[in-house]
Length: 393
Ligand SMILES: Cc1cc2nc3c(=O)[nH]c(=O)nc-3n(C[C@H](O)[C@H](O)[C@H](O)COP(=O)(O)OP(=O)(O)OC[C@H]3O[C@@H](n4cnc5c(N)ncnc54)[C@H](O)[C@@H]3O)c2cc1C
Ligand code: SF4
Image (cartoon, rainbow, N blue to C red; front, side, top):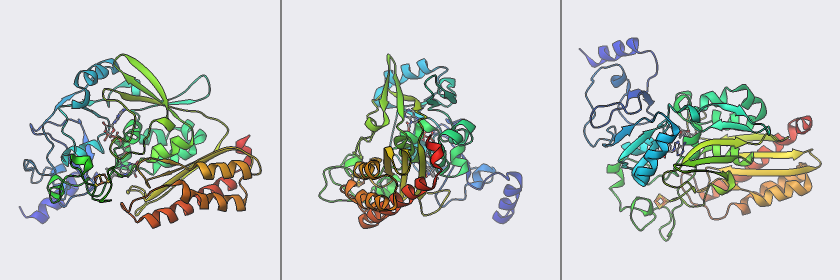
């Protein structure tokens, strides 16, 4: 059969998506129990999904997963028990939209994957007695984006989650996975063969940084869109380990460190996110090369309480620009003191540049990032000013 005929048959048989492929490990099993959207790579993945040319990928190829054990716990307690037993030798598999790519790129080689997708304890959106919303960490982003309570009460969060990847990604990607998204770097988030062309860097066991030659720290970027919105909304995380549960403010969860970007311990799971529903106006904006697929070149979330003339609290956060979501404390102070007036908005946008600190030229130049920060802050504050003040009552 000719390739053209195979392709045309394939497309007729599987009219679902042009980039679906089955995920198999070394032993030919399907650890995720489902289908995964593949974003890049030269090979037309529809050939796999349609069964045409159903040749397993070559061992060691970027399409081939390394060997690991896979366990699907029946309860949260069982998952935490396994994570405690294996410690750093285990990895949590939620939607797998990031983790499976990292495994293929040999950025991780865990002995055990703990699939938390089926845990009921991690699902859903529930209002709490104090008015906050509890978002289960295992809830898929599409479910959150479509939740009426979340859309009405936390529109900035709905917008941020809606901006993650594509619909296919959001259908399987979870909130917990989004908040624990590893930092990314152009030199590291590549196939193993590509990386081997240069010496390992600080993130891959070496002692150099290819982005800043003289650096002794890693500047890989934090690109989680959910983190930016949830920080602006003052969210808290519930973290569980085998013997204990703790709560931590999202402000204290992220670190300005590309190598260890969160304070999550080995053996710990994010189980839920609590978002206070205070009388805030909030907004989220993202600038990306392609809307609806790409990571942001820069994102901003801002929330204010009070009227335009008298702002009683303000939180402004920039994302995808450094190794953590950056709180713009100087800009926040200017807005809290001067309100959402045109002159104050301009002053806050200027102050954003100073709040950013040292920047790299990862994915875009440092100069562009500073300009982007100013534009994003100006647009976000102007958008808040336009929102009806009655919302703040
Ligand atoms: C094409 C494409 C586009 C993308 N675009 C964006 C984008 O624009 N914005 C964005 O923010 N992200 C983007 N992503 C990244 C990713 O899809 C999302 O961040 C997603 O929400 C990750 O969730 P997941 O459930 O698939 O995580 P997984 O891949 O399963 O896990 C990601 C990491 O989080 C850890 N983890 C997962 N759940 C938990 C938990 N409950 N507790 C502790 N650790 C946990 C995993 O061990 C792993 O290290 C994109 C991905 C792709 C493939
Ligand atoms: S910023 Fe430097 S150390 Fe960090 S991943 Fe990139 S090259 Fe490696």
